Image 1 (cartoon, helix red, strand yellow):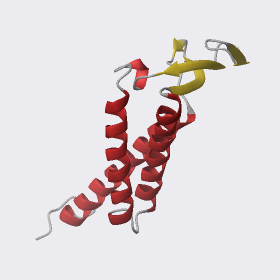
Image 2 (cartoon, rainbow, N blue to C red; image 1 turned 90 degrees about the vertical axis):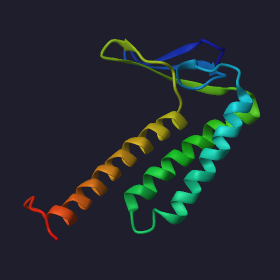
Image 3 (cartoon, helix red, strand yellow; image 1 turned 135 degrees about the vertical axis):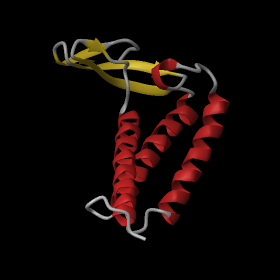
Length: 139
């Protein structure tokens, strides 16, 4: 596909559109490749550390970190090989022209959502241990 070319999948909802991004989400920090290399390597190392140290016995945490790791590596590969990220999923959600994104971006978002769910579960579990299920404090 040519840059900017679009194929309709579901009219007024979903398109495959050829787009490039040399920045981060929504095109911010355009052309700062070294910044993205350093940050992404640090993020990949941190995620791998947490997968190894913290995710044992916590399947949801492991899945969320795996999604984030896959998304980070996917976009990193594009940045290293192409000096830009290839985006192609173009949606109109409730009439809003959402910025074009890719599968790696989707994996990152899914991973963050799952991580938030895990954090809420951990918080509830901590409160139940501290206050009991009926809300009274246990000493």
